[in-house]
Length: 117
Image (cartoon, rainbow, N blue to C red; front, side, top):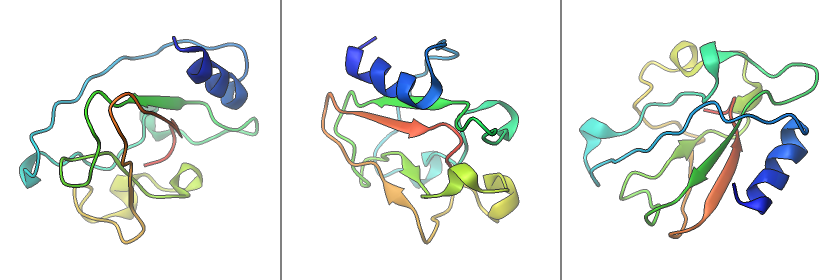
């Protein structure tokens, strides 16, 4: 519960915060069979409501994040997309033409809208 991460979460979601899940991901580098599929980090692919984001995700980088070692990929703007990745893409494991890779160093934290994929 780092104060800066909590401040960012409160700015997006308000003061009523709760931890819903804690996950770790161990991905062998350069292994196309284990590339993470596009997905959103909220239940049932729900979209933002009139108040905005319902979910935020904090990605704590325990190792260096690079495209070569399987860093998280996102498509900008998909937090407001009317479709889930499964509806929008033929292959949710494939590359998307607008994807960005979350590059980062050990100890970095990326905070993203949990509706993004």
